[in-house]
Length: 529
Image 1 (cartoon, rainbow, N blue to C red):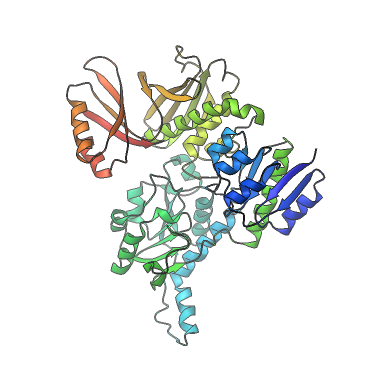
Image 2: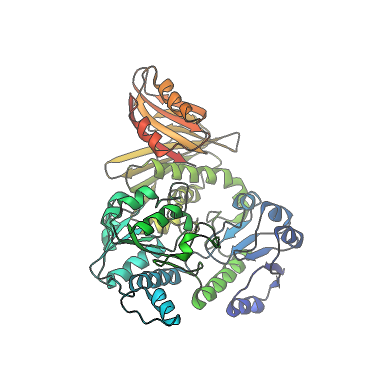
């Protein structure tokens, strides 16, 4: 049969040639389609290739009666409704490695331009002024670079900066000390990175936990005269706080390729500051990167249509597509279990053991393990960690992964158990499905619980004493934070207790600190699922 493919954006000539020479793929190009227009056009197509502008919404996917695969020519899949695609059994894939070198090189370009005031000096000459004094810069040699997020791009930036004679420190909660040592970088806490760095380069994923990671408090903790580069996501930085720090001199300079709002408002102060360099999200915009993006996505989509291989699939395991729909609820639950393990771990996870039991899932230990790893690692490199490469990413971060037995809780028909270890600790969490599609956490380190893994959840370890629930409820209530559910498991009356408190809104950090001092609380953590 001939496969019908719709392309909604520009592809490199080499990518188009691949499509033209394919013997059983017919393709059409339709650019600038609105979601409604795309929904009207998509029926009958087996494959869809999009860039960042086209939106594959739930309505588009619902209208796609023959659709098998969506290929994103790029990394981010924010313009694709992954839930809708998964529910329909549509494979979604991207090209995470194609622009890695381009992004790393753009980071270096911004870093050097900021150090030597190159744009400002060029603009001064263009205005007819020869002013060597104002163009005086600083050297990278012997300075300390703090890299936030040592993923694909962060690793390449670190390697290049080492060649300039810089000392490299990094903050990455998913990286083991052993792997950091192999890469010749020093793994430190976020606070230590802020205090020691002369330059800071951001390469972290944008999540609820990292949004405004560089806020007023973080900026105040930095060395006076620090310089910041951001080629990751604009919302990692509180822009108003950055403006204040730039005006005061706490931050000597900033070089930004991304902003919280793109394009930014014309009156955004950052656009008009002498000590700020801004480029319009150009990190991946090289001829080589765009050529490679197009070639990769065309090859991937053609292979997926033929059922040969599903490289860089972001919403499916390495199994045949027909089983995706049956496994999807378990895979989704396994991802949440992995995310919970990461958020509750007290240090970088070094070992993962997975056990499963049940008629429905017994033969699927590999994709379920991969789903757990994806949930654990996705916050590090969003759009880059998927069901194909998650084991490799775990390996590169020094995480030992194995399947095991003996973790099961046998009074549930289909149970997924995961034990993780870190330096000085370990934790086992078990999950199952109620009514085939309702995920539940049912056991944590021997504490029997019944927790829906979604939303914002406070997790507390305490002694089982009267009045504890009232104290916590009062503190939350005073700030208008509503408790949706409170689930507690305990080792016995008056002994240790583990509670999961689901809340309807975020809990501020200062309240977390206040809650941590509530007797008889031993520890409190906040997770988002």
